[in-house]
Length: 479
Image (cartoon, rainbow, N blue to C red):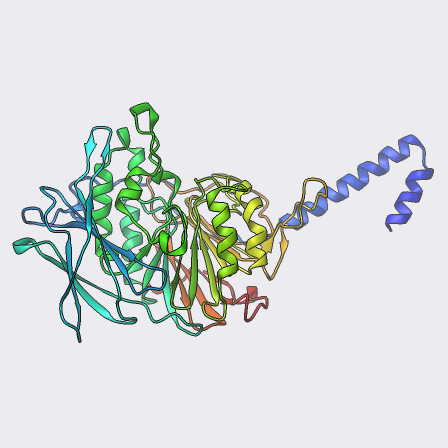
């Protein structure tokens, strides 16, 4: 057919050549429309309105009683394997004790001593921020821990993960762009009451949204810490930084990016050879989790790029078969909000994601929900024109879960027609869970806030890219 077209064009008159060229161009345009019109947009209709920030006197922001009582208690993984936990909290009146007392049901009480820090931001001075690492813990064990002294002691507990191994089941919660609105509270409540029972949260950035308040009011970092304590004091949240966590405000003299975030939310980046808390990795059960920073330099020769180039080859899929990447800005996004903001990072890192068979990439940033097919756009270069994403069973599924609650409202405007890479998209608030069953299968479910706690509005069985790289797209279900 191509030869026939060329012959006819070569022998035709100028006007005929022009007419034939128009037909060819129109045919290409129409074929592109067909290729791009794929996937499913949810028929669920939610009232469009701005998310309302909860007032400072809300019950969820209540300060614990007692002089200098510890508040904003939160934990995260403290090493790369899961045998350590970082316990953090804030005291307001004075530094107080920076010791954590902890014990298991079969063990004696032990103590770990940490450090205390403070920071200033414009006209705000933080409380005394404590960080203490509890190390050499046993796997799969429930520990109780106490912070504070005398009449203001506060007690919590956590469960360490199972020992790292290929067939270890484990369930992660997924939350992003949470904020502190009434919708945020609904999201956190739905996660807490989800019968899937997430054991740790993979948080994909944008915590407090303090930067949207006058002068980046850091009191809103304190209220967010008290709001989330009911979950994050009992199970680790694995942190990713988002754009609303940068807090770069030269107009008020604040030129240190991520100052409140890094002072308040430490991560075990040194354990994975990272030079920054904004990118790092951990192992947890049968998963290898890589956290990247969308808002740090990632070009060739930069520290983050050098680190990821050395990190991906280290992943031993016979030990941790599930390879998960967290970052804030999505590579693939069919909403008009933040459209193509992740494109330059995609060009840099997508070939590596495909080469090393990343199972899934979780992102936030866009205040809505979207799940892609397994696709890649790695064939494209600046001259060949192969610029349409294609199905690729070595590629990750890309999931945008920036629907935690924020304070700006939902992203409701979508690109039309739907791109073929988008499997499902919906502008609603919610959270998700990713339940690893063994080295070959994991069950993923997204839960919108308007539904009952057990209801999954979008779900899919994942087949591990290393051990079972078949097409699993037929397992997807939408409600």
